[in-house]
Amino acid sequence: MTPMARKTTLIVTLLLFFLMLASCHNHQKTNMEPVEEVDTLTCFERLMEKGVLTAVTNCGAINYNMLNSVPTGLEYELLSDFCDAYQLKLEMVVNDDPDSCFALLDSCHVDVVATGLGLTKDLKKRYQMTNPILSERWVLVQRMPKGWNAMSTENEVENQLLRSPLDLAGKTVSVSKGSQAIKILGDLSENIGDTIYVTENDTLSSIGLVQAVAKGRIDYAVVEEYIAKITLSETRGLDMKLAVSVEQPIGWALRKQDNDSSLLLAINSWIDGIEQRHLRRVMNKYVSRGKMLVSNSEKKQSQLSEFDKSIKKTAKKIGWDWRLLASIIYQESRFKPDLESEKGAFGLMQLMPVIMENYGITYDSSPEEQIEAGGKLITHLEKCLEGRVADSTERVKFVLAAYNAGLGHVYDAQRLAEKYGKSPDIWDDNVDYFILNKSKSKYYNDTCCRNGYLRGTETYRFVEEVIERYHQYQYLID
Image (cartoon, rainbow, N blue to C red):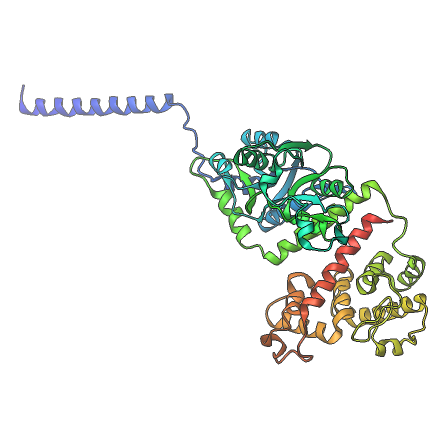
């Protein structure tokens, strides 16, 4: 074979080889299974894409309940705040059995368990646990000994109360069904080497248990300390000094996902940004509301005071809910028409002498005349603030602050809010901050502040407490 022939044969062979190779490659491509796309989204990104966070909590006077077909409650409001921060829709699942709540989380039916969970080692092993939202410890609630207020010494009282965990040996203690107090008392029983008899109550919340102790229905109850403090503030004859646990951080549980903590990081970022002042406000609101709801379940009140008729008459004239006006009167005088303060404020509405003179009343004026004069002052304050706070509901808080501290200080706080980048026509977390801090030289010496120093904590609390009591009166009476 000539060199030319050999060269031609080699070229043809190589050409056939490459054609066969290409054909084989094309054949493989046409017979390959479609490649599945790998999901690279994080848990939080998938949640944002879905646009919905599903959470489970327990139903009760504090954590979650439906009031006039509107969801409300401590856990509900906190979850709503988180969802609002990320523009998510919140879906609530209610389940009162702790095991069932975690079963829902394990089966991917919910994203979060929010039932006031203690951040224990056991839970941290099984689930992703958020940073603490608040902290609590558990305390024993017991009745003071019979005739305690007539005893001659404090030791005489103390000797008849349980003051050590060892004193719980052989005692029967009531707790709410599913409460963490069950495990706490179980561990305590082991530690003291004796039996503590624990009774789970499936009908009473922590607040209800405190009231049951007060009424003598049960001897001892273990409840969360913050609930005990608020409930006991208006209940004489009870003691809560014996703590049965150390202070425990409280948070939410999330499902563990392989190397994916994106949802946990988002929630923790939100938790770290919560103002403690706002958190206390929310917590106190729902604990107080829960206390009122529990007491209301036993008995509805038909009236708030002997002056209800006059309060309603004046409230109608000024366009206010009469229960809001009643809340001011309770705050000012506890419905005592002859009350006079050290500063000279007098009567049901605690009007200063110059205001009394302006509205034509004296120390001999009737309760009805006192209330009417207070209504005229409120109308005046509302007119002065109308052009500064457009929203009528929001304006109520400014009127209350002005009623307590005077218009000048409220105007100062609005100017300070505007200067320091806050909204001058929004009270919560805006103008209220400058009322609260107007005792600081930085603010009362500011050039925009024309009325000087104010002990703002009093005014801040006045607004908070009047509004909160008004909410309670709404549930208490029609």
